[in-house]
Length: 252
Picture 1 (spheres, rainbow, N blue to C red):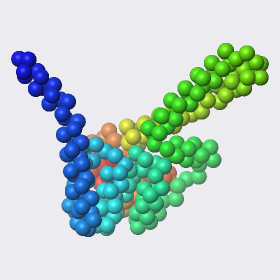
Picture 2: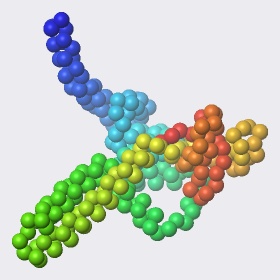
Picture 3: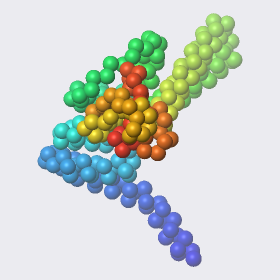
Picture 4: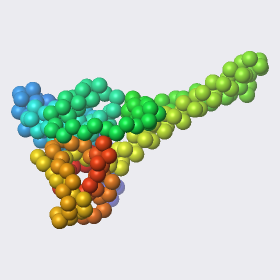
């Protein structure tokens, strides 16, 4: 029994190394296939890597594969996933905008308040992990500044320490709010991409519903309601909304 327990423990300890070795071998093979312009093979290998553990780099590489294969819908889907994981990456944003420029639908977003646009840009400035680390550092600085306020002997030093403590605390709260916003987006995933050449958006979740408008592959939609079986209620950036068949879209 002791030998079995020891072997089981060794196996568990070895699993992370085996998993890392498998991912590394897949990456080498996928990168090699991409370099040889065998994008179909590269996409299959990168997809296996994404199933092992989704990362911005893998999603970005998948987007590049599908873009080179002229599969714009899948390219946008994976670029969107990469941008969700690493929103501050300029290369991902550039390629995503390039892919979007090849879509048919031109959806003009509704005007939103300056504060909303500013907050959205700030949230997307860094990844959720980067915001989390920044929040921890700022909170630690807040504690140090507060200690300076408590134990400082000079009035001027205590005033400065108190002011710094307040500033660090507020910025730590903002950093954690940004991290929370990104984490919520990653877990809830209400964004989706139209994956078929054309999809009719209905007034009701049924084929008998009135046709409202037609969407084409690569268009981004936000899911409002996905509780009705084969249909999802979606909203566009310009405010239009309706019901679309679930198999016509894929969640980011």
